[in-house]
Amino acid sequence: MLNLFTLRRMPWSSSNDGQEKVVLSALEVESLKSELADLEEREAHLKAQLENVDQILRTARLSGYLYIRTRWAVLPGEPPPLDDTDVDDWLPRFVVFQGPCLFFYLLSTDLSPQDSTLLLDIVEIGPLPSFTREDEETHYAFYILTRLGLRYECSSSSKIQVDSWLSALQTDCKLGSDATAPNGSM
View 1: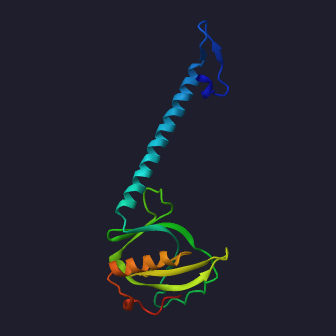
View 2 (view 1 turned 90 degrees about the vertical axis):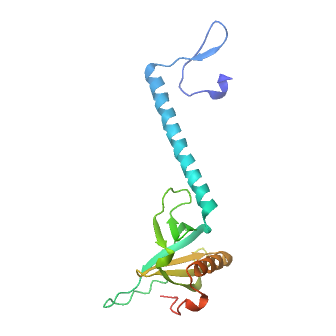
View 3 (view 1 turned 45 degrees about the vertical axis):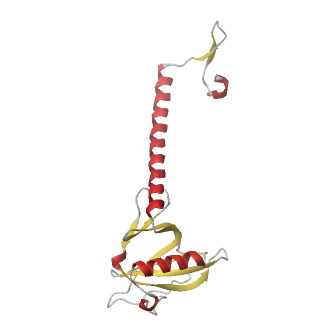
């Protein structure tokens, strides 16, 4: 049985009764204890991540990976923004629509979001024109504009996913399709 768990560089010895034993120095025992403690700590962290993801998925109205980029609205007196439609700065984010908030996580296993916005702060939601990324895949897009002037542009290769997000956000933000402005593109 011990042969299944052969540890590298561990000296083995046989006793008179035919059983094999590992002979370890005090330093090696302490090293193994330290490694075991590290593994237990990692296991606890992974369990916490799993419980967090489980809780998010159970309580979220909508969640999933979207490609996100952010833009700020032009303030009075500022020059118009550069045309950056050719810049591919879309980053994948795990987006969660939960309660009165939208949460933006780097990964679905992250314990805390990178960014968030209240639904009350959203003043405009609407579709953006579809586009083709470098990988030749068509992406469908929409935007979320906050009253602070921050604009989240969201995209996915799934039109159904984008339509689901648009519908849910417009419904919960009390914005009908007639409330979105025609300035959907920058």
